[in-house]
Amino acid sequence: MKPAPFGYLAPRSRQQALDALRRFGPEAKLLAGGQSLVPLLAMRLVRPSVLIDLNRVPGLAYVRPFRGGLAIGAMTRQRAVEVHPLVAERVPLLREALRWVGHPQIRTRGTVGGSLAHADPSAELPAVAAALDARFVLASARGPRVVDTPRFFAGYLTTALEPDEMLVEVRLPALPAGAGWAFAEVARRHGDFALVGVAVVLRGDPDRRCTEARMAFTGVSHGPVRVAEAERSLVGRRVTAAAAVEAGRIAQAALEPHSDIHASAAYRRHVAGVLAARALEQAAARMQVSP
Amino acid sequence: MKGVRTTTRRSRPVPLTQAEIRLRVNGIQVTRTVEVRRTLADFLREDLGLTGTHLGCEHGVCGACTVLLDGQAVRSCLLFAVQADGSEITTVEALGTPEALSPLQQAFMEHHALQCGFCTSGFLMSAHALLRDHPNPSDDEIREVLGGHLCRCTGYRAIFEAVRAAAARPRHRA
Image (tube, rainbow over all chains, first blue to last red; front, top):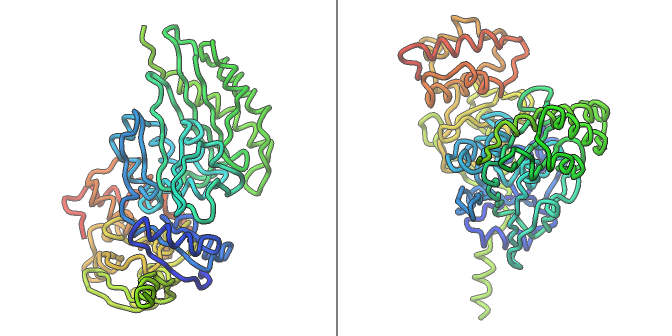
């Protein structure tokens, strides 16, 4: 359980980090909070020849207002985001989901950008990004670019990041005014990766009829999944218990989860529907509509 | 021209396999040269002889290796010693001594919050940080923090009671 030898670089500026990536990108790994990467190194599931430690790069940890929503620096610790007043005010869904990420002792070190860039198929933050239509700012010596959530998550543990690129910021649009939200998850123990999790956002008209629904699942595919048919089934209706259960059933039918040692595909599919219905009811109760 | 180029090349950082680090451990300034792949946990145990920090799983699950990095509870198996350069580390050795236990350690003893003791130093460090930041934690706050640790003697209930008892005392700090 000791990492294989590697070369270590600790850039002191963003420019140095991008320069290191340009030189060593394909053989390097970026070290953010290390809460996923260091176990992989210890088990020698990854053996990069160079480790580029981002922890000494200034200016990558922040929570800022951005166009009504938030911009969060990739190196911002999860714990710092969890307790940030702007997060509670503007993106409470993120705060709720963060409480499911590992444990307090993990979140003191783990970063928002690290979790997103690692793209574990059972991680909570990718589902939040999918539910909020987050945008990702990627930087390289070639220049920055911005990609949306469906393009960022490219597959199992795979993102749109090129070998010479790093994630520098995630932008979370504000929830629509009065929108309801919820996050629900089932894990074997609290703090474990999700067997299934779901992030929900609901918006309604003054008559409490749903005008927009977003349901993003984690743990049921190689990355976060939105189920458009289930979302559409709610539009134009009040999100009653019956409507929530029906949307959950549609999601169950549409999802194609896998089996592993933690849970069977059939169990995951069942739980996805049940959790979706619960989260939808909770989100509907949180919805605020002006009369 | 040639000289300038050489300077530019020299200024480019080269990946290191060893590094000299300076940090404070339990209030004492320490300078050592370490292999960059040395974890902080191994550094504390092997290089400094501070064997109160235990290693259970070595991949961030069990919490036995929890120490304070600049005051925050972290897994020392998920941090390389080189990353702790310039920081302040607090280990269980800083809490109390066998003759003079810290109030938290005393509460662990009184509530039978340990059997084999392997997980105990990790629990103590997390609980210590919790009580420092939240002198009167709610039961849920205690549970959330203890949830980051495994105890295979199944002593969670007693550990919870010990932390709650320590919180109720006027001075719980080490």
